[in-house]
Length: 339
Image (cartoon, rainbow, N blue to C red):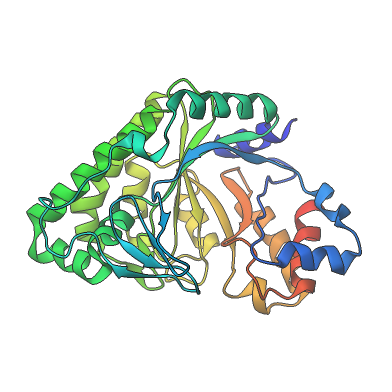
């Protein structure tokens, strides 16, 4: 089978061997592996099961000076050190009157060129499962525009404003989805960090009130194109996982095992027939602090138990981060390719 067929089988809940995987590298991790192996040839051992073929940058940052950027909605960010942070939100008050809300096409410019580029990428990467990326989702944009504390308070004290803001964002994202109608990618992937280590940031009930029905519309629009829906969320989303499944999410990406209730084996036992999990190798634990032997053992366990009956894509919960011990990074590469 081609790499794409392994992924499709997993999404259709059919077991495969090997289990398809993704493995990203941030900072100098890949360069350190080059030095560790004495050659970059290790990269050729990795199979490209999934490939990005296009997308839309939903932030649209413009450089202001060496330390600051301003996003498409008008919020000012400092980005010259990690972690970057919001300096000045676009809306200081809970009113849309002063917000110069950007149009969809302002994020991608020449539509014909964008689509043509994606079509070329689909043809070039026909052996891989092809993904359109549309990042930074509804909840995240709400606090990018208002500031995190303000947005959380808006959900309680300004419900009509907060709902109206999310409606505007939903219309924008529906327009983003519409762009890809004639591009034969396999999936559209979103990102919206609903969770923190202990639970849902808005709380399950407010998430169901504000976020759930709006993503339901977007997921439906993707399914109407015949594409799968993938979404990233950090943290604990176990309390809303039945809701996520109900509104049509096909693949949940990240699955941080350290967060409350996110033990992947428990999730597999309870929800494994209804959704595909992508991730599950602990970036806050196993990747950083386990021995290479322990890492390889955990990868084998994930492939055996999470891959049983399909519905699993192997990956660290996060791309390998700067500071990852090079021996651990090498153990992950070897465990992934030597299943």
